[in-house]
Length: 322
Image (cartoon, rainbow, N blue to C red; front, side):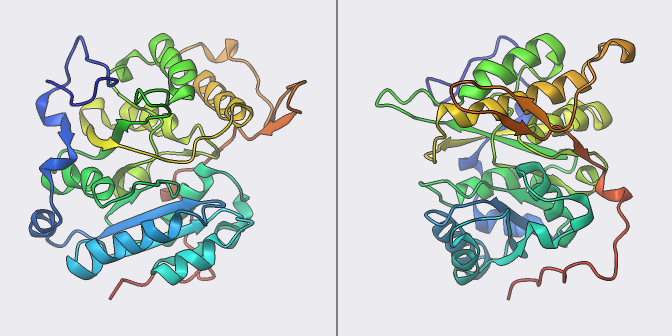
């Protein structure tokens, strides 16, 4: 299979053609015909994304709710933003719920926790997650991840990949992927070595699968889901989709160390190392950084949502969009 972008690796063992997709294969009108009775939730975890969350929400609302009735729920889980993220997202047409207001006994803070809590307050049969910092957003990010799920009953989880230009040569993105996630996959989880971008923020799956596995609290959630879903349901239930180029807010180096630490801790816990030889990891794990200052990294996990009792005092269900 030929990939359209020069920085996407060419696999020595290409995945089956029915597990690799391109966003261009799907249109909103075409997917609406396939949708049937399947309900669709789009959820955005967001923290301090006032600059970009509005256009993303309004774009989804205009193209996939108002023009074509494809998305039934549009949700933003605000993860303790210090800016106007929540107000802007609500004005743009999303239902916004603060992470602190969802299952407060389980804590608050972190990408993985926001994703997990969005499962609790949504009701879609299929849920698509999208980062809220994309600067060149259009509906391909949603359609690409949703397409394989609506057109293939045997696919349970879809992971997006894309070109992430940081410089004029179109390369440089995915630093934590290349320096931490991919080496860990090669050493400990080789069955995942065909995944182009295991940490990408655009992905989705069937609720029946997602509620059956734990979610890691922080940035290890992406790789953790791939490991747990493939272990429980089989790698053949996972598909990939090329989403084109993605321009987003790139984090400085000092913010990448905690991300890499969370991924390393999760991988050690999920490795095939014997239980007696696995390191005992405190939660949070303290990352000592003389030049940047110490960072406390949450490395725990949240239980499968299917095991969490739905309380009558839960936040109100997300309204279906008109």
